[in-house]
Image 1 (cartoon, rainbow, N blue to C red):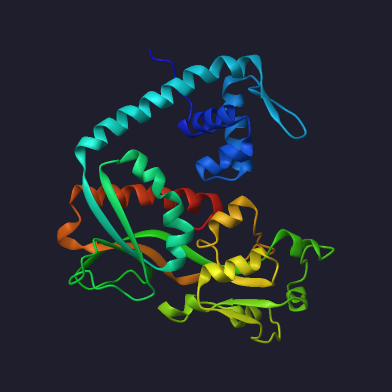
Image 2 (cartoon, rainbow, N blue to C red):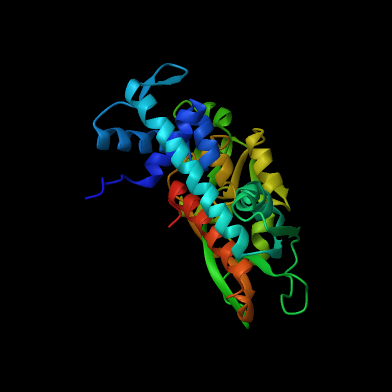
Amino acid sequence: MPEQIPHLRALRAFEAAARHLSFQDAAEELGLSPSAVSHQIRTLEFYLQTKLFERHARSITLTNDGAELYPGLHSGFKQISESIRNVRATSAEGKITISAGPAIAAKFIAPKLYLFEELWPALQIELLTSTETVDLKTKSVDVAIRYGGGQYEDLDSTLLLNEFHAPMCSPDLLSQEANGFSNPEEVLNHPLLHDDAAQLAGNAPGWPDWFEMHDLQGKDSGRHFNQADHAIQAAIDGAGILMGRVAIAAPDLIAGRLVLPFEKKIRSPFSYYFVTRRDRMKEKHISVFREWLREQANLVQAELELD
């Protein structure tokens, strides 16, 4: 009977951490938080009933068992990647032109495209950014990533990410409050930042909704931004507290550049969808990109609990 293999995510996390000798670097490679990587490795250690790392104040080192496990896993994952790359390189080729809003392109799609290109080297990607809705029936665009309700006439749409709105700020700004914003009213002590681009799809939640939810008499004042990534950067720089879109800010939240001072989030009436013409859904290069993008979205959704 073949030896039982534990969850591949735990093995992947261990291999990356052992290769980098860093949970932080492994987390950045895998698109997870360092705590998530650490949790996966502890799951593997529990399964194997042995320690794989010695955890020091500012570093990690492999134990004897960890050093025994690493070479085989590293070689195995490398062979798997090469085999998949060889098969995929011959099964899909061509060019995919993608239309997406500036924020979702900058924060979610563009930073991950190199991962897709490693898997599908024969596919060429062209990413076009615009706040305008592209007509997929007349324009030479294969795929659109849209923020909306998901119902588009004569088009096929696949849900990628649900969206939530919540106050977010830099860790330094959070530390200015002795109890870390224990009272929602404390946000009024700081400048408020607004992502006006969220309103392009319709009546998205904003600061007035959050004030109403907490029975506060807050003013809809502060700085307004017409690009979500500009608003996020302002919050990272400590300019104030942003009522931001959690999925858009996911890379910065996972990396710790932003924090959510409050547990409650407001569910947006809109989500992010992969949209293409119905007669093109079965084209190989489009279907593989859709499934890969869904996998990336699922990782973000699980990490930030955006269900």
